[in-house]
Amino acid sequence: MWSIVLMGLAGLLVGGALSFRQQHKPLWTQVGFCVLAGMALLAAYLLTLPGT
Image (cartoon, rainbow, N blue to C red; front, side, top):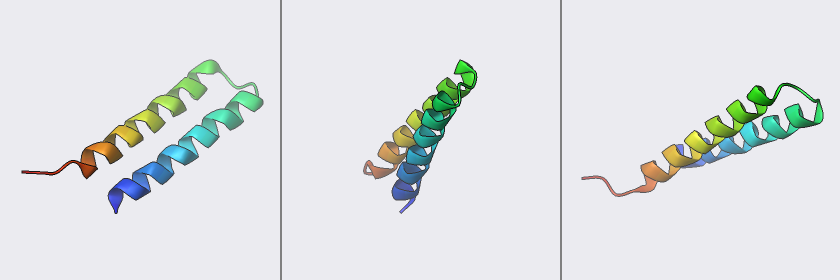
């Protein structure tokens, strides 16, 4: 369940980064949103691994 929520959050973050790109905002905001999206996808993947 949480992995689906995190994947949705990653999609929103990537959309925000693209929106900031179109608005010509500073590069660090775009990079920050993309890094957060990558971290959300990594967390979603790690939640799908079998636990001990």
